[in-house]
Image (tube, rainbow, N blue to C red):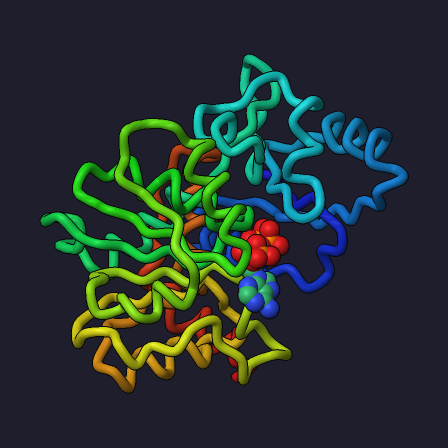
Length: 278
Ligand code: ATR
C-alpha cells in the first residue's frame, strides 16, 4: 500500500490525484494520493507534519518548489541545477528532492517523435520562467541541438542561458526576431503563460513563417488546443500538447517513488477527455 501526496497552495483543482490513481490502476498497486493545502504562514509546521506521516513520497507545486529545499535531506542533480524541487521521495537516507520538469518534457516529446533528436536540430524556446528553465537544461543535454531562447524580457533569457554555463550554442533573441526567423526552426516550444485559459484567444507569437513539418509544442494544457497550436496546425506543423508533458512528468514521479514503469500513452486520450470536461 503506497501513500503519495501533493503539497502546494492552492491544490484543490490539481489533476495529480486523478493521474496517479490511473497509474496505480495500470500497475496494479494499491495506494492513495492525498492533497496537502499548505498556507504560507503555516509552511514550517505543516511540512513537519507531512514528513511524520506514512508517506512514500509527495509532489511539490506552486509556491513551494524552492522553499521546500532546506527541509529535505538531499536533492538530485536536476533539482540542484534548477534550484527547485517538484517531487520528494522517502528513502533510507531521508527525504530526497527531484525535479521532473525537463525529463518529463523530453520523454513525452521523444515518445511522440522518436527520431526528432537523431539529427542536428534548431530549437526555439519561448519563455524564461520556471518551466522554461527545466526544459532548457534538459534540451542542452542533447548533443545535437542549437537553442534560441526568446522572451518578452530578453535579459531574463540571457540570465537563464548564462546560469547553465557549459559550451552550448544557445543565444537570447527577441520575440520579433524569433518570429522573423521562425522558418529556420525544427522544434518550437512555447512555455509562457500566454494563451492559458481564460485568455484562450491570445498567442505569444504569430507562426506564419514556420515551415511545414516543424514540431510545435505548447506546455499550456488548458485549453488542450491553444491558439498557438491551432495556428501551427494550419501551417502543417506536427503538434505536441501540454497534457502529454504533464502526464509524462507524473509517470516519472511514480517511477521515482515505486521503481515501476507505467506507460503514459494508454492514458492520453482519457486524460484529454477529462481536461475537455467530456
Ligand atoms: P513559470 O514558472 O510558470 O514558467 P513565470 O516564471 O511567471 O512562470 O514565467 C512566465 C513566462 O511567461 C515568462 O517567460 C514571461 O515573460 P517575462 O519573463 O518577460 O515576464 C512570460 N509571459 C507572461 N505573460 C506574458 C505576456 N503577456 N507576454 C509575453 N510573455 C509573457
